[in-house]
Image (cartoon, rainbow, N blue to C red; front, side, top):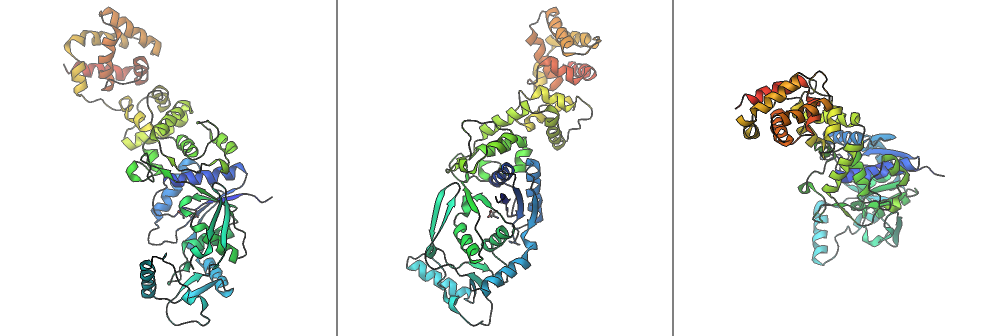
Length: 461
Ligand code: GLU
């Protein structure tokens, strides 16, 4: 039995976007499921648009998502000798030819064809040349003139293209550099790729690639063309719909598990199940269960999944991502409660780590006097604030329970409902009206900081 070999083949012309990440995930899942091999190939032959920063961004995105590759990264720019050799082979065997047509001729041809309402295509003038000519040339693949190319797409079923719809494709430019459809073929062939899982924007390239593979006497791989991701307005997902880069999702406070789960489900299903561990995904994933129709991105669902993972993942693990967020905010967490404890109290009330970080700053940073404080810390409440401070200061055991008791007893002593004391106290300690339960907040903040903040707040009125 042939072992499955899949590949993810991004062009490094930008960050890793979520459409690419989903394709990578499907390739990775299928390789893991079948104990096959997952290859990473960087398609960087477009020298003008490819950048080392994009390569780094793609590798960083894959690493953060934990999509480890077994082979690669292979760089197409390092394989030019190989492409040249295959090009020579195709020319020698009569499957490709040098085309000397000038830009002007091709332009004029195109104009005439458009005028005659024909699809613009190369007319094959140089196809039958027997002698080399002087002057610059590109190399074209001699596409079969008749018949059809048919393949069984693993998602769409049988797909057929008429050969007369496909003209003689340029496989090497005038400067000798190979073109996309050609390098992909050579690579998929050399890397013994068995399953090409990629976006359906490539479906028109597939018959061309199959024809070139056949000319090389290579067996074409299986193809699976994944429908694109749409924005909520039904248009192709793009920046104007919000974040499209994987790392931007990290910045916005998503856990990789949530994004992977979301992307897996966006375009694939296993019954009605919504939440999948990575192990379950590997177990259940089947290419045939990828949806044929394009799916729309739904941020609310991703947020829901994210909160699920914030609540159910190991707090020590979540704390690592929270630390990253805190560092982004410039918050030094060395003086304050362990982040793991913060995760435990905040995970119920925040949907992203960014939100969690923003709402936990007061555990580590000074609270500045603000309007909320001026509204809540009023002369009437001072006696109660002072008495709660004194009771707290005299506590010998600092636990949630002992703190809770002090809060309820002080409120009663001062003839207040607990809420009437709790809210000004919360504002004094956190600078705002929203926090985890007060006993937990005080406990995590620590006695010294609590006393200091009550004193500071009391001084404002
Ligand atoms: N490099 C192509 C892209 O980024 C993908 C090619 C392929 O998967 O065959 O769109």
